Image (cartoon, rainbow, N blue to C red; front, side, top):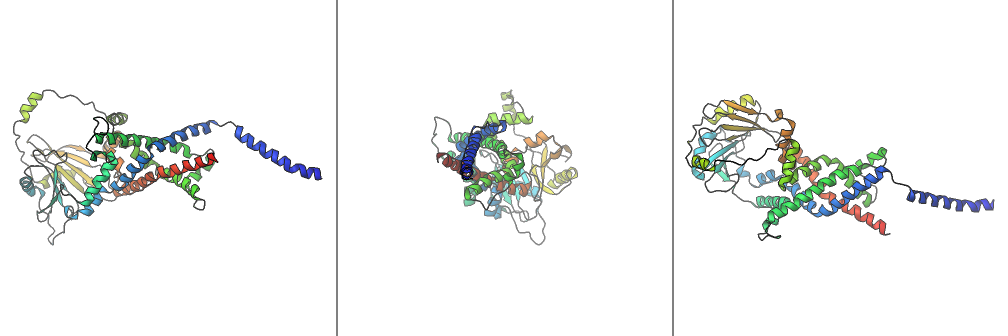
Length: 422
């Protein structure tokens, strides 16, 4: 009996030794090798782009509510008190006033369905190189100009800084080129664009390695074991939060680089089937001679007539933007957007004959082919206002997750490195 009793511990030791050796020498399956390959890509793309991604995603998180924060800081530009009679002045009666005050040409008028919102007139001034012109905010009940888009606030300046940080990493603030003759704004755009591409690769590879070796354990990647130690909690947060926000992270990542690289923008358009070759224009002298002639101003009907015509083909409540023709031959167009918490960012458009208010063309967004709808919604897909405040909130949360991923991912890597050195 004593021999047997003494032999048992030794037998157990040899058994466990063989078991350990078997695990070490066991060949990896094809899936394990594949997972290891994508895990390496995931690791290095994250380590290379981590700091830049944190900066881009943090600034993007704040900039998600850019419009709301600006309106909160300057309520006098957007909101008005409704008087007792509650009757708004016709917007067309104020065009001449805005043209006189701005000493320019009114090119567009934005009319809100909310009676407590101002009219917004966009004016182009000769010699003004502003891309969007100057917007004049007008009280629709008194006709008083409450302010212009050139007004600056601390909040506006802060949001502009966040935009610069997001797009150019604040390098546009540095005048002297850091690399040769390459403008710093372009350099910042290249860096942010490259980091975003690496981030997108990280998202895709992260989805692959999210699946465990045994598929029956897939539910583990959806939960956080809060009763475990901080290392396990950090690991679970990285896996589960990334999975839940995956689609939003992918949309942000896949659309972002188009503002950094023309080749990426062209490739994206070709993939969607919406690319159009840029043709070189001819007959410059002839066009110059025509443009030197002073265009004849169109005779416009009351705006209410145009809006009524638009409402007949777009019978829903919404906000309007009237683009005014700059000569007698040009048409007048009206864009209309739905309103509400789930309202889509994309609007419908109606083109009318300015002299008769006859509808000549109608473009309904939902009737367009899928690829064209996606192509025209690239910006909305990137910033999150695809379906109004609903998707803005989702994108805000997803941006917070994206900001945390490089941090939690780096901690996972450091913990694994510590285990290997022991």
